[in-house]
Structures are given as C-alpha cells and as structure tokens.
Amino acid sequence: MIIFKSINKLNKKVDFKASIGFVPTMGSLHKGHISLINSSKKICKKTLVSIFINPTQFNNKRDFYNYPKSLSKDMRILKKLDVDYLFLPKVSEIYKDGNKRKIKISKKDKIMCAKFRPGHFEGVLAVINQFLLNIKAKYIFFGEKDFQQLYLINKFIEKKFTTRIISCKTIRDRSNLPYSSRVARLSYSEIVKAKKVSKIFKKIFISLKRKFKNNKKILFYLNKIRLVSSEIEYFDIRNKNNLTLKCNRSNFKIFIAYKINSIRLIDNI
Ligand code: PAF
Image (tube, rainbow, N blue to C red; front, side):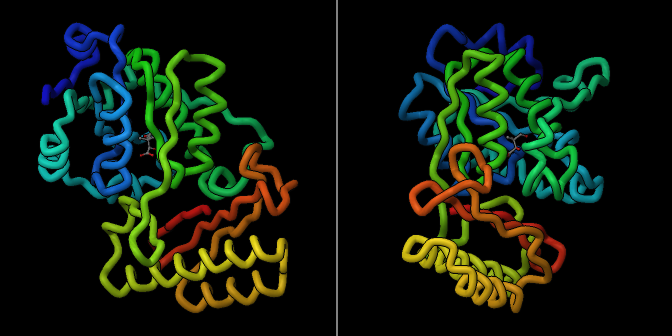
C-alpha cells in the first residue's frame, strides 16, 4: 500500500487513466467501509482510500475534536484488504490558502439532517468538490447508510464531474444496527439501547409495507423508541427518489435521527 500526503505526489504516481476506485472516509473503519472497499476492488483495477476528518462538515467543534481516531488500526485493516493507495492529507492540503468555502444546498433540500445540522452537507460537498477537482478517479463509493448525503452528493457530482458514483447497501449487525463510526463512542449498555431502536425501526418499515401510513402503529413504535432514546430528532417517511413527502407503499423510505445519551445516530430503510 502506497501512502500519500500530498495531492501532487498522488497525481504523479497514480495513473488516473486506468480504472481507479476512490473510497473517501474519515477513518475509524468498520464493516460498512470494508464493504465499500471490497466493491471498489471488484469493479476497479486499483483502489484509493482517503482518511481525512473534514473540519468543514462539523457544525459543532466538540464533535470534530471528539471524532474517533484509530489510524494504526485503520492502516492494518487497509493493508489486510490489500488496498493500493492511501491518501492521508492535512487540512491545509485540501483547503489550500485556508479557503474553506462551503457549497450551498437548495432550500428544499434543507430537511432532516440538513435542518438539524446546519452547514453539515455544505461542508461534505466542499470536501467532495476539493477531492474531485484534484483526484480524477473513475468511480467513487458511498454507503446508503448516509442516504441524504448520498442523494446530495449525487446531485452535485452529476452536474460538475465525470466520476461515477457507486452506492453500496448498508451493512448491519444481527440486531439490524448499521455499522457506523459513532457506535465506537457508545458504551456497552448504550449499544444495547441502539440495537433496540434498530429492531423497532425495522418493525416500523415492515408494518408500513403491510399497511401504508398506519399512523397509530407508527406512534406506538415511536413511543417504544422514546423509552430507550433520550431524543428522537426526526422520524420521516419520504420518497426515496427525491426525498419529498409525496410517497407511496412502493417508493417510500423511512428515516430517523435519534440520540442515545448525547450521541446522535441515524438510520434509514
Ligand atoms: O461519510 C463520510 O465519512 C464523510 O461524510 C465523507 C463522505 C468521507 C466526507 O468527509
């Protein structure tokens, strides 16, 4: 595995005319990331993974400083997966001249996480923009776990870049809890609570598939979630193609953001 810290060196060494798969991450790698990397390895000749905790996507400084870091473990995982290239840039390498300008999102997209984490997706788009201006990969990989992120990145990339997005299914444990870096911040008893939420969340989906918008049932399940979660930030039923509230039994997706103590978790089915 070749490690790069500078964009110049990366571009000198990597042949971007070949089919290169790019998996951007913020580290703390888990099974979700591993599935993205394995998809890239299947489709592409070479795989490039980046680990960069992007400061512009944190609307809360404490969240940024507390973001879990496990570089040595991550590097062991990447070597074991036989990843070709690892990009480990500093903030100044990505945001040259200190320019951390965010990319605007439309008013109608300011829903769910965009509403509760103002500026978050603008920062995500800013880093994806910087990456793709400098890294001409053929494919870029994202997980459906962050469905709203995937939706906004899709809209942004297709207007500006030729890089193709490959979206990969959410990887879950047996209790339906999706793998995520934030789970690393939960204690054992908090993980038990998150698993409970995940099981109930799946029940909501199954119940809606049987009988769409059965509000009584939904309220019943949300109350069950409230018994273990300190706060449900939002629960939405939306059209999976455009994220509007206009949806039916065949095109809906459910979305939730909730807190276990102060840790914010999200999911969608
Ligand atoms: O999903 C993430 O880990 C991050 O938002 C991403 C896409 C790597 C951008 O920093």
